[in-house]
Image 1 (spheres, rainbow, N blue to C red):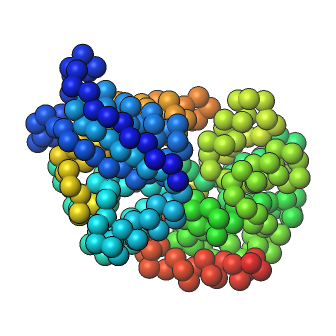
Image 2 (image 1 turned 45 degrees about the vertical axis):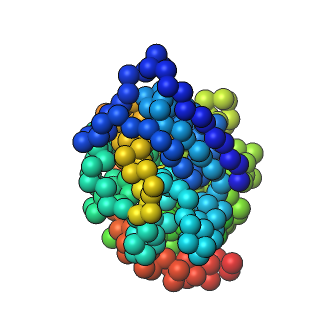
Length: 329
């Protein structure tokens, strides 16, 4: 887990302050816990501070399980430190919401991001889309257009995916399959019978398909899209039934010490500037009006599978145990 502190500067030459809805000029200290990659976290904080130079931002990054373990220890000690969490997936936030750890924040401005990408109670807000679809080697026997195409005889023993025990995106994807009215557990069971192989994380699946060991992979979008632009023999497909997505939500804790700065930070992430930053960092913005990174299709053409986060949080342990039993894990 890495820690950075960015000290405030009073100069108004940096930028005119971006003012959150209902907020005046803000300052003070803001503590952010995030699972963003370190360069992305640094870039996000830097961009926010150009708009709010009087805010001192201390940020600590780590994997979502690390961050939650740290937060749990702080809660147990009676002194949770973060004002804002920016973590991978909605299921993590559903758990915190159920415990009353998140602050309802109707004053956060969501910009052009669709309301259904945020918690209806405004306790957490999706900041981007990291979708899971089908990756294929360009020498695969066919190009799948639908999830059900992976049941074709030519795909037997040729499909890999990350282990849901390792990848949060894969865990959400299994649950999105389970909730899908046209797929559900009958599809999952047939895919496992076809020889579906969970292995490690998304990077390991990427290597297996890029190297030709497997023809197809079930992975997050930006890895194969990015590598294809660098010459890797792969292609990413958004299936017709839709893709699952993690939204890297942001939330303000109920124990936040600097609520005005926290509101401004989350508002920045959802603003046009914040969404353009997400795109420059290589991610599909939550705002469909913001141009995606090179290699992505128009956001309006991407269909998301229906996903009930509260239901997934309630059923998650049982669903993932059932999946592990099916694949022999």
